[in-house]
Amino acid sequence: MKTTLVIMAAGIGSRFGGGIKQLAPVGLNGEIIMDYSIHDAIEAGFNKIVFIIRKDIKDAFKEVIGDRI
Image (spheres, rainbow, N blue to C red):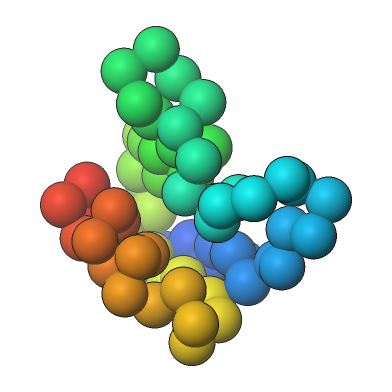
């Protein structure tokens, strides 16, 4: 059975202070928040991930996320 994780990452982040909030490193090794969510989802049995993003962050998102998954 396929189980899909949907990650909504289209927020503007106007209070964040610059940069793309969804791609900002937070971990000691440059992990982003989504890395933790994705890891936990895979451990729980999810086998497909769908990202909901804005068109204007598509290239930056692919650059960061594309190498991780």
